[in-house]
Amino acid sequence: MSPLRISSRVLEEARRFFEDRGAEGVEGTALIAQNGAEIADRLVIPTQKAERARGCWVEVPLEGKLELAAALGPTERYISRIHSHPGDPFHSRTDDANPVLTFQGAFSIVVPFFGLGLRRGFDACGVYVRQGEAWVELPPGHDRDQWIVMA
Image (cartoon, rainbow, N blue to C red; front, side):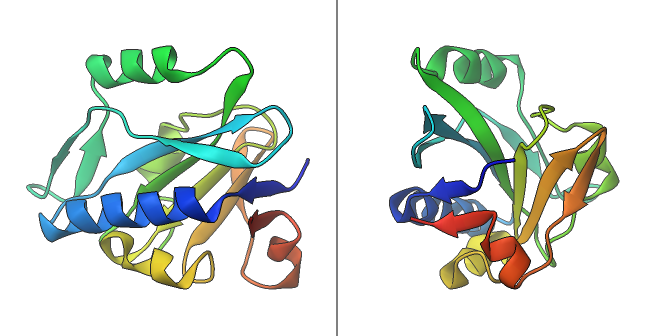
């Protein structure tokens, strides 16, 4: 597994998006694209539906899935999912059942408090890496800092 280097510009764009969604009381989701083996430098935000009725959730309908499929350039790939939760950062059963990215070494970043957690970089976020058929949490600290960094 290679370390994930995400540009600070992408994280700032994600923070603004999630905070805007949170101001409406809903979650948001996006994918982070990487060009070759360099820095992950593009946030792709698909069309999405979100609700706060019967719990808080976000879904990417067919239109959004087609946008995601068409958004990548010839040398790009999605390296991480990033999405917000209304409270603490964790991988819910729904997150586990709908992994979006399934390749070994893919990342999933969960931003707490409707995006406000990104104001502290990754420190307040839940960070998971795909290993086997499961998402494994990378707890905050030195070990996680070796695998995911702001560039």
